[in-house]
Image 1 (cartoon, rainbow, N blue to C red):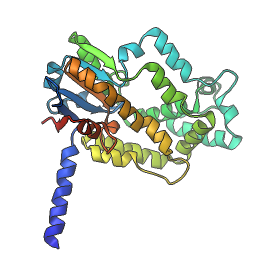
Image 2 (image 1 turned 135 degrees about the vertical axis):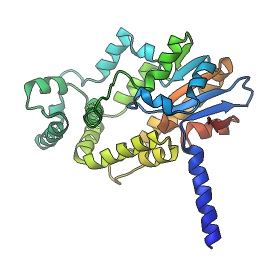
Image 3 (image 1 turned 30 degrees about the vertical axis):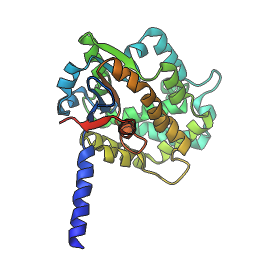
Image 4 (image 1 turned 60 degrees about the horizontal axis):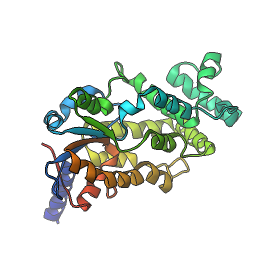
Length: 301
């Protein structure tokens, strides 16, 4: 019995070790040169690049970089305006008109904790009252992260680094999704009532949300994809949890859509795909889908 237990433990450690990295090589299935995929995290600093074994050589070897979105497209004036417009509530609607008096009071208490001010301040109310609940929820998470992370520079992040390097090297840059798709997914994919519910879930379950985020961050910096998935799968067993449809919209359906595009992209040029690390693990994750499609996928050492 002890021998069986020891064997199972060793096999578990092998499985964890196999996923304990973020950069993978994609080869075979007719590719004349390998491509690569790296898992990113939107608040990780650029300095973390130096912790990724082999990434400098990969950037030198590939001929183009693809992200979830082409960042140069996002930063164009017209598209920035589209994104900003999508983050706002419809004209004539305000955040406080969506919330009850009690909900507004609870939100203000959380704002004071994170920002030091709340919407009883007219200047703060003017800025926040026009934001959609989904936008404010995202801003709260980012502000809290910045508060806990001195020196955090939101203009110099791991997410966009790879496209920046490719552009500097005169290589191609592309996106697996359009800005219009991301706007619909991030800001228009849920009703205002559901957005409000999720905002208040964040406000009222702050410790749980922080624990989940802390677990994701720790797992990412440990380059542990299994732990990232475990953290993302944490549940409260309430309506605050994402529905299966919401999870599919955010992760699984997008993974499947990317796999429809990636073969032609890789056939055209050796490519580095830089996408959120949460998209890589699991039975419906990109790594498994690539293997199912006939590619060899192995960690870069």
